[in-house]
Length: 142
Image 1 (cartoon, one colour):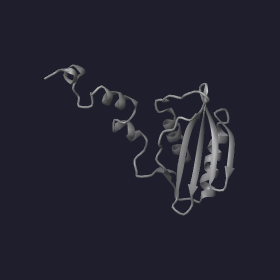
Image 2 (cartoon, rainbow, N blue to C red):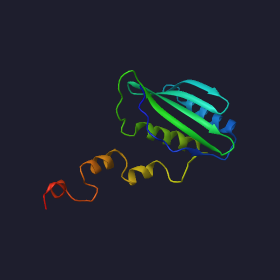
Image 3 (cartoon, rainbow, N blue to C red):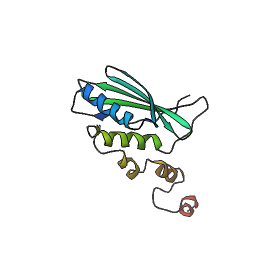
Image 4 (cartoon, helix red, strand yellow):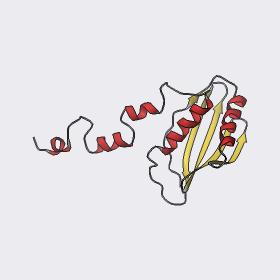
């Protein structure tokens, strides 16, 4: 079973080969976290250890359009639950270390928390607290 969240594609201005080498260097620098690197022309897959679980991260490069699609999913035989943004933070850390990628559409993953779509924002929306009103005001019959 896989738990998958959407991650915006990254853009780049270098060749696909250079972009792949850059990512491979990052993974080699921390081999205690990143393992089982598999690569083909325009494709990278690596497993990343996160506590007691392992995530599979895939990168599919588009040379013509100069962007990379990313898929990051927890590898598990059991039903998986939210990682409260751990995968997204890891991917943003990789992107920043590489210094050659930008998030498609501008901004960064940090702006997701500012828009209120992160875990805390989702909880606030669930309980009706996005308006700034306390739960007493939301639940009252007025």
